[in-house]
Image: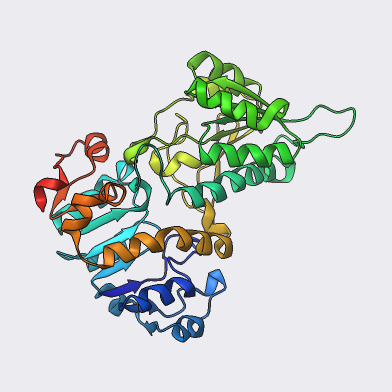
Length: 369
């Protein structure tokens, strides 16, 4: 199979979807790998490093002529012109919050295989590495925007002897939440970690001990925790690519101290804050609503591409090999993890939760092979 790797064009998205080791693996499997010139430069990977592993460096049009395109983030409008029947795109899509892209994929009969829905039983192996990065970055970024010169309240999360520490509330106890918690503890903050599952909260309580206050995520607890927090991090992910629920209302946001910070890692799935009404970019990452700084960048890991690119390839390459085999019948019948990654196939929406959130007709993919 011919496999194309384009340069990412999302604002300040510095990652690339494969590293040289990934190229080695695909070439060894007998595939041809075409990489857009300069695609890996921002991740510290030169074209020659790809060529040394057997890749062909080319222009963007040649990349999109390939049978399969591997990306990091979802295609943007500028890339819709490359869509055609039978094209396979393997990337993060987050379609539940993007009806326009979903419809374009369906109309052009593109096979869209989404990193974020690959997996079963709540285990999402291709989200894990970027969730780890995004969770850690969320706390670091929030601390940065608490600084007065950045418009924040001027609170140092760790305080100093004799001065109260800052409070961080993290809503969601999955990979993002746990990694945000680790960083918040490391910065010396008072940390509240909220989740829906009491059993999982028990495990998190055992993991973090007295460094963290765990609370069940309900309306009352959220309202009280948000009101006392200097920073609130949205770390909620629903399985199946579902749209994130709105958990923090405008009234709750109003209760926060002026200059406090909200970081919504779930913004690419619609966000959990009522006051998050837009997706921001690394070039213009924050806005102020109700006196609170809102950070709503959808590609946080793009800010640390060296780490993110290698971590992502480590996880995505094994499924890329299976997809590139072209044996979709076998995949769909035998591989439940990868089968769940198919969001659109043969002009049909095959991700049940995404279809529900977008109000589109759902088709069981097993009916299409």
